[in-house]
Each structure stands twice: as structure tokens, then as C-alpha cells.
Length: 156
Image (cartoon, rainbow, N blue to C red; front, side, top):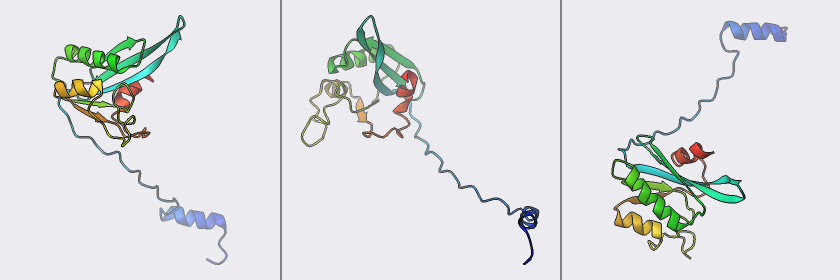
């Protein structure tokens, strides 16, 4: 077809069904292991100032049942995180086995220590150990961590 114009080439390609560039296959998100009730995601966020007071919203959501529990505190401290976890233990009708949190100072001392390791001396970690709860931390600065987003998406 040395004398074929653009329109003729296009009609020929359409006729044979090869006129479109194949779409790239999107990588499917990995599926997560199913967990029994008791795997909590805990997060903290700032609330807008009301009457000049800064407040923080502590949120816990169970991975399996999606049951949500939250409290508002005036400070984002380890003491409040411990109190919140104790209240979560009273609120949820099942045993809490795992907790996933970010790397905030209210939950861990990982980035306070020189070697960037969890010391086990943090109040929240001590409570988890005493309560036989496995405390897991999200990867720093990775918003792709979908499961930690479960608690975060509720308050954003």
C-alpha cells in the first residue's frame, strides 16, 4: 500500500482489530491475610481548635469486624495512649491480640533510641507485653500501607 493515506491505514487497522495500543495491565493490590477479631489499628489525629483548645482524636478499628472506638484527649502522650488502650480492652467484647500503630512518640520509642530499635521500656509497649498483645509498627513514611489507613481514613 505505497499510496495509502492515513484514513485508509486506519480503516484497515480497525478492520483487523489492531487499531488500539494494548492497555497496560495494572498490578493488583495484594490481598491481606484474614484475621480473627482482635487485630486493632490505632491512630491519632489533630482536631480543629474549639474555644482555643487543641484536642486529639484517638481512633481504634478492628481489622475483622470494623468495629470502631474513639476518644478525645487534650494531649497526645504515652499516658493517654495507655489509657486509651485500657479503655479499648474494656470496650471490645473480644481479646485484643495484635495492635498496629504508627511510629509516633505516644506509641513507641523506636526513633528516640540511638540504634532505632524498640527498647521495650515505653509505657505503651510495656502494657502490650503485660497484656500479651503483639504491638506492630507501620513502615515509616509509606502511605501505601493500606491497613494502617483503616484508622486514618476514618478521621481524614
